[in-house]
Image (tube, rainbow, N blue to C red; front, top):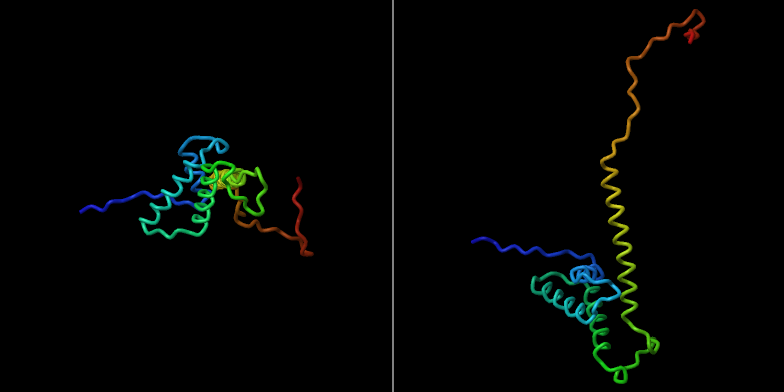
Length: 150
């Protein structure tokens, strides 16, 4: 019986998973449908659970944040609960989008640095010439080296 192999993407954190899902949808970060993104994120977490993968707390916190944003989008404005510390009219999506944009900048910078590292590995510095057989200096009777005219 042949083993069934599943290729499973490895994500460094919840923002990495979100960026993956956004790229898969081929949309701009600012134009992403967070309701659909939250659904995909939860589905992905379910797949991780089924495969018995350890789910880090960060992924669960991100799932809760996405569910909160999704619930706010679904409820009419007059039925939304007022949360302490959150100004009225403040959209929690913008904080998430800001984090995604910042994370993407760092990820892109890391990719550029890795490219530079790979390029640098292909560069071989010119090493100084190894000294050849030593030339014996003839000396005069006083022990001083004799000068060679140029």
